[in-house]
Length: 335
Image (cartoon, rainbow, N blue to C red; front, side, top):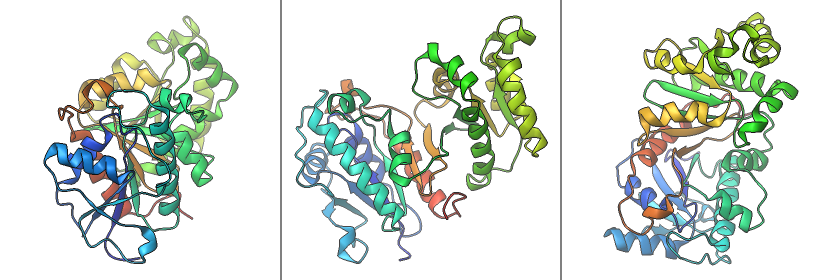
């Protein structure tokens, strides 16, 4: 491996704020000879750079056989795709291009031609319009890398939150946990495996209950008694340090006081609402279980801000920094 660390940033939906925050965040001089490679349409990136008063990154390809000479470069792995530029609008061609860029960056990471990837936001509705049947980045990257055990962790400050279920309707969460307790079990195991990789000592992991007051012993819900508690008992016997099921209305306050190394939430908003309240502009998403490094900012396409130059790049900057740090450590899932 060349000593220059190559971090790919997929541009996401070019009609959102992805290209803008990627360019803004990448201006920082990153440590260790890091080179940033934007993965996407060079024309879209050049247009955004011009609007922001920045120099357009130079073209480069992993096929060149040598690392890029410039600190910032752009690689378009799908030049045959011509995404339509309409800031703030859902366009199927933009989603098809975003999908191709993600797949190419993941393959380059698998082949060690990129050492980490950071993903700018995509539009799930746009993917649906483009007939791309994936719930989001997490599941797409798991499929690209042949990964069966994976989880979504988001963190900001002292909070590290992993979701037992992800993008499913709230009405289906109980059934998903009850019928597939392995979802919860694997989320906890992956969190336990990830903590040293993230530079955190293996402290206690808090597990939220599903119901208010963690069900009050079954009085206002049976999921804690019949599903969550049995999973935790089995994992404690395997040596994991777990607290729960705990009421979700107090566990995040305790986590902010550093009582827990991480929190397992039962559903999307249970975990992400408190995280975004605390770290809206600095949150980072990292996919656990992948044999590659993948991070992303903790926000969406923000179509309402697209093309205005007003997007905050702090979360993207934190995502890049995290990717660089993780690329320099042994990945627990890389074989």
